[in-house]
Length: 267
Ligand SMILES: [Zn+2]
Image (spheres, rainbow, N blue to C red):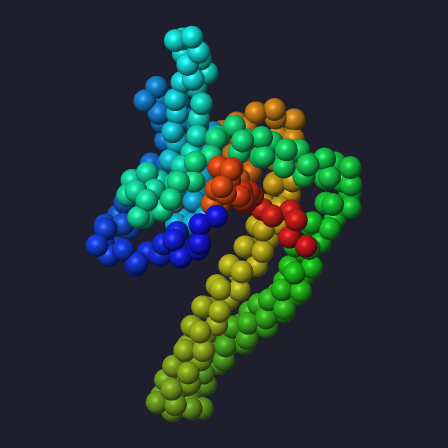
């Protein structure tokens, strides 16, 4: 294993190689094309756009070559390597070569393991999973809903205060300048309340969405548990990203981290 100082590369450590602005633009372009980037033959690898280098954060690039046997082309081997390393060389980041088939096997096994656990303990897992979300939600929801109800009641009260200020002015009970001051005061408070009510309603609806997302994800992982191959659909439906760590001396990747769209193991 190389000493850390040999390979840790930070964004600002190599200003001579590439400027921050250019690097940002490169990444923007990469981002726009890498979800489903096609090879020359028009093939989109299932993992395209999901692979990241753990050491420099670059997206990993697909490499492929045909294995030859007796001069005849055989299966195409797909692999990924750090995009930063491929483009800018060793001084930017070192090789993180990894065969796509190895990653696919890891994903298939992991999805199966997770789905099996869900099915074997279906009620319990679902209850725990949902309640982990809902406990947080109930507490939050209760506070926010109370706040929202109070705000709405106060807004109603302000409306009637504004109305009675008008009436009192009309009936000659208060002078015009006092009426204007009162209405200004109530209107300002009403505006603040409108903003607050808006924000509260947004929080409450996003909390509800979280619960829907959790249910959706459980359905998806069960759907893909029988997949023998990693498909593009599986990746798009389940994965957030795959982070590939530094290779060790035997050339095998040290650490592959699978990040799902929703983390079922977040205990
Ligand atoms: Zn890298």
